Amino acid sequence: MHKALLEWFEKNGRHALPWRQTTNAYHIYLSEIMLQQTQVSRVQEHFYPLFLKHYPTIKDLANASLEDILSHWSGLGYYNRARNLHKAAQSLQKEFPKTKKELLKLAGIGEYTASAIASFAFNECVAVVDTNIKRVLQRLFNKEKLSNKEALELANKFLNYKNPKKHNLALMDLGAMICTAKEAKCELCPLEPFCKGKNEIEKFLSQAKQKRVQKELHFAISVDKNKIALTPSSGSMYKNMLLLPTPKSKSKLLGSYKHNYTKYNLTIYLYNSSPKEQNLEWIECDNFLQAPIPTLIKKAHPFIKNYLSSKKMQEKRV
Ligand code: ADE
Picture 1 (cartoon, rainbow, N blue to C red):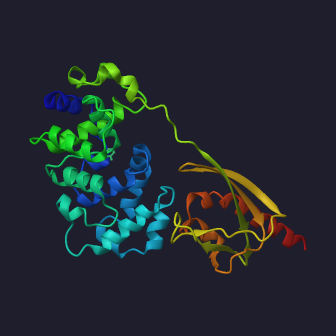
Picture 2 (cartoon, protein in one colour):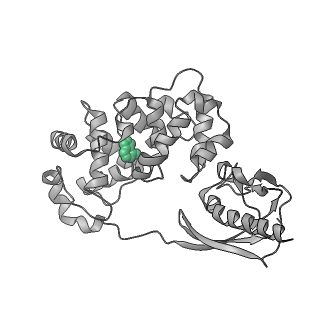
């Protein structure tokens, strides 16, 4: 089974992914954090190269301000990942931890991420179990119910001790490309001859899609002398970031737009209104997009520009 898996991987694996072409532990660490909740293509094409350009070493990350890091994380969502990266970078005294055991001590690093970095950066002999790999193991060994602990035990039993890194990456790619949640392309699978679940594959296929939640948000556009009012977010989702403030009045609607974020389908309404909040930060309108704001607020930018130009026209007329 190990041989069949690695032969398939050599020919079909996603070897061109940039974080697979390096052994720089910081780069691999960053990729794993980004990939936790973001699609491979978005990380690969945009966020990973951009972030590394700004913070080429973990020292650069440690020396940057949290606001600066959050503004470069904008668009990725799940901002706690960025806060933990900063915390972890600042906690490092000398060199990057080299073992799973040491990695587990860093902020934001759990079982999966510690194993992934230990395996992919240092070739440590540890099993890596993400949701893809767990699914492959469940089907391969025909285990409909498998706790995370049991999956890890099974993965350790099945680990290829001669080639642990390639084995883990191969299982990951098999789960992402062949043995996917919605379908199993058994005819293309190198492990098909050994698979105990292949004849009962229907019971493993997921139909369930997470229900999306419709939500409306209301924000104030309040401008004074080319500065726009923002307010620190009070919720945990956007902690340390700025948002547009809440409108005092909803009588002057400037526009609306849609934004999808995690499970939410948001409709955002913008009003010309003074803000309800007392706690305001006035940002130059020209610097709006560089502020630590999430994408849902960045999308208000064209409306702000429109509002500013119509305000200027009015002032001219007066
Ligand atoms: N290569 C290494 N880790 C990966 C991940 N989490 N997703 C896709 N490819 C990877």
